[in-house]
Length: 144
Image (cartoon, rainbow, N blue to C red; front, side, top):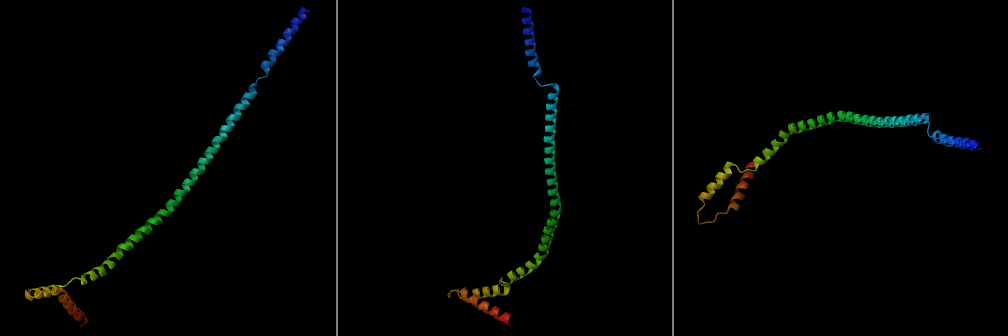
């Protein structure tokens, strides 16, 4: 009986030890989990590469659009500047002619000096009346 008890005890211990060792993941399960992790990381990398490719394509389209628009804009600005430079003398000539007609001529200045010198010192010099007389003469000269 003793022997039988020893055999039963030994058999039960072996089953307990065997059950602990056999319950863990097998080598195939570990390899499958590694393959799954590798495939998931490859999928994430493919998604990232696809996203970056889309960004690069959008950037390329933007640069193509700039290359088409900027030369047209530069040509328009150049032509506008050239047109302004060509029209500038046409605008300046009437401006200079108009500004020159308002200056007193040498005849008017000489007449005012002669009147100033010939006026006796006792009488006050009234320039306002003198300038009116000169401007009246000037108007009469233009009408005739």
